[in-house]
Amino acid sequence: MQQAGQKPDSVTLVSILPAVADMKPLRIGRSIHGYAFRSGFESPVNVTNALLDMHFKYGHTRTARLVFEGMSSKSVVSRNTMIDGCAQNGESEEVFATFLKMLMKGRGRFVHKLPDKLKLDSNVSVMNSLISMYSKCKRVDIAASIFDNLKEKTNATRNAMILRYAQNGCVKEALNLFCIMQSQGIKLDCFTLVGVITALADFSVNRHAKWIHGLAIRTCMDKNVFVSTALVDMYARCGAIKTARKLFDMMQERHVITWNAMLDGYGTHGLGKEALDLFNEMPKEAVKPNDITFLSEISA
Image (cartoon, rainbow, N blue to C red; front, side, top):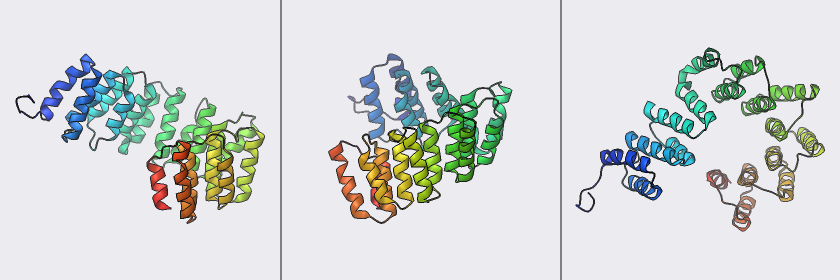
């Protein structure tokens, strides 16, 4: 077609993509995706659905998710393709998460009843997804009710509930659950501390910050990169920016989220020069900035 001077359109792409997906020639698939992008044909939902199907058949679930999340309009076919593709590639949690999103808008309570009807109410990952769904919908009260009525509570469930409390500004509830875990002799892990540290950051009280930092040291979890990053963020939000930087410098391992936390701390306190100096250190440490990094730098 191209040799004859005829330009392929969206209908052409939708026709050829299934064949390319079944043949699985990776180079050709990428070439067609690139052509669709350059020609502006990536936006039509029928083309995007075909691209989704192709990437899933290639086993490229990450690329497929990026395509799906980038869609301005998602049809039922798009979501069904996403569910089927994740299922075919063994990503059961993503299957359920996508299904929940299909029904979340105004139909959360219907989803709430589904696990019971499908005899999935004893499935921990399913119930955790429900807790997450309601928390993201700012209905942490319903999430807490589900949590309280769980027949079996795992550490992952407790940690998730603490973090959801923290993310919804329910600091006292997060700390109360943490205290219950301690009183029952439940072993704490790094994710437990991250949730509690996130909650205490909202208090912006140095005394509380030092208490949880001390607990992290006593339990030998202060070296964990996620715990340390949460501590850096907490101290910065408490106004102890020098302590945050000292802790940052002491870390043996730093992810991009750690740098973002420190940059955000500088920006929050109007320390633009310090933020810029730190940002310029990232290439020297072979750390690649992400969107949050640039946002923090602009804010500073």
